[in-house]
Length: 278
Image 1 (tube, rainbow, N blue to C red):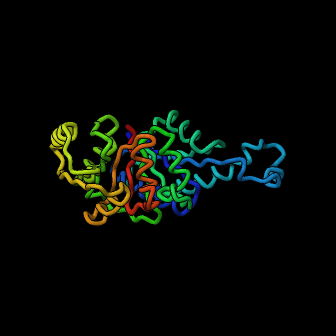
Image 2: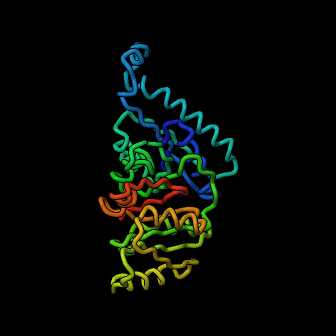
Image 3: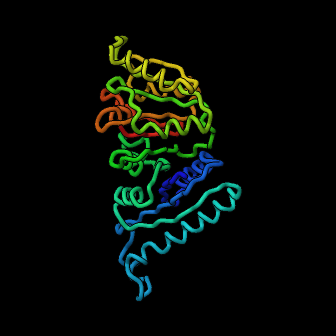
């Protein structure tokens, strides 16, 4: 059984990601943990003063969120009556990433599915501040769903590898699970600075051929193109339904989000992205 964490701020974007998760895990035994995190800064003194005298500030802040989560859960039960899903509502009054971290530990979370949340900063235009902070600070796989993305079974999955990185299998289970479940074809893209083939790269390809031998896969290379543009172009040309990648702090992730320093690229993802941590 999988434990899936679904953070929500009750926006349409978050709700779209929740429905994506419902369809993505169709016919699997899953427990979905819907999490809403409240911050004290969201409330004014008047809000808290209006609470009944016999309640604590904490109870006042999270009670309405709990009701909203339960309404969403009841609607999900009606929308997906034939699925073997279990739902739990979690409300917290904390720093967003701290609440995520606690939920992962207490609920034994396998994957976080969340929507982009529309930050306007150039370096965060991909996912928005909350999603980006989770990716940066939380060592749990994240499936990020673009705003308004309509579910499409991922028949073609792109596995992108940056020129400084090497193929590893530790932490790759979410990718294998997705490919196996949806009977996907895999496109392995190496993004390189030049056309030199190193011994390490040769060994990587040999390792991948063996590791993915039971999966329909092909190898591709893009040379001397900024990471974000390379991935975006490949997604469009090859009709990719999902992108997957490993990240390391301050390496691939930074180049992916910020792109070229000279052209100040900001990349808007067109398809869901599965982020795995190495």
